[in-house]
Image 1 (cartoon, rainbow, N blue to C red):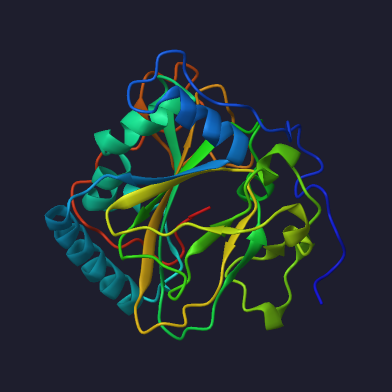
Image 2: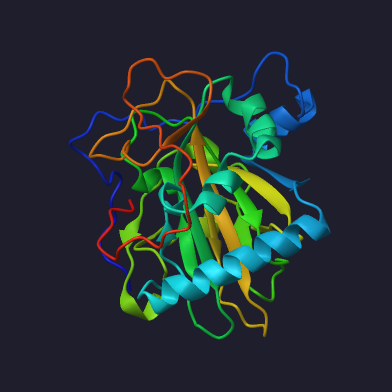
Length: 282
């Protein structure tokens, strides 16, 4: 079994471990009902971002990126913050159609703190145990929206993400360190997750995104199909959030202004470089 229960991954930091309802007064894309649903359930899905033809190009781009990355020694779960090195990734995480939607939740200043390309390969045996993203992140408070772009069609057979609606309102839940038999991609697990509600699968077509709160309980089972399940997770936050422990070093100020200089603002890369294996990717 997993280890002892914990209630804070960073007990020495001053963090506000509560959920903040999101939404602007005059949304441009989302309806008021959708914003209310996000705050009630902790997620929204799906939103179509890219056409089938556009996704053919995006998928071909990622296929090449993944192949070159794995040849350089990266694993299929480790392509983190490559927007700093790869022009095509930077273009995806700053796509205006995505930002327009997230803007309606977070407001005019949008900061991409982190990006994560990953591919759950057929038969790799890995799962993502029940967890809360905010538990991992040394941020001053919880005003973060994750946009998850499906590169491949996603269903329950190839390991779709499941969420537990409403669990985000409880904010920080007790968690334990994972243990090896779990085959967990991450290193935390909320062992009693199903006591907080019934899971809902986020079924997506390639080119669609889902949105979820950094406090919602979510996870995904192993890929039991013959098809890959690939996605790009983009973590956006508002300008009133600060980071500890150097977690402000990999960001892009996508919209608005960040006058304090706390957040890095990485420019569009000039090429498609594969980062060195010792690159900082948190």
